[in-house]
Image (cartoon, rainbow, N blue to C red; front, side, top):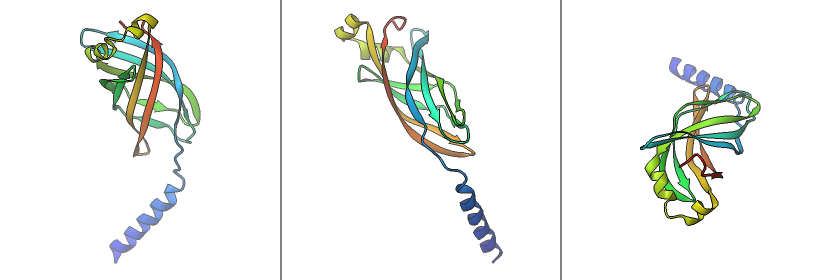
Length: 155
């Protein structure tokens, strides 16, 4: 009987607390900047400046995740986030996301595209699921963004 009362009290407490913890979707408003910040024979470290709105009344922590990267709509492999990000509550801002990926995979995906070489531009896309959370509750959300950027400094 004691366990039943404790269990019922815990359920009542959690349900009353969950009303205070409402979640609104985070909005991605586009890419504000793109840079290759480090490159060597094997890896590229890419920085995206993402414009993000967090309408929630609490900070959201975005955990390190692995995403798919695309070049000119061709799959170019996996990219790993190198750092966690904290989206500030009730704010809109540009957050730097660093992704590390295999340089050879990117070059293979770009290879053979005469249009890319002539235009000097390439379309970079990122898709996948990011894990984000607050107060110990984690929720995955879809990421799908792309941007056409200059090849200058990438090769």
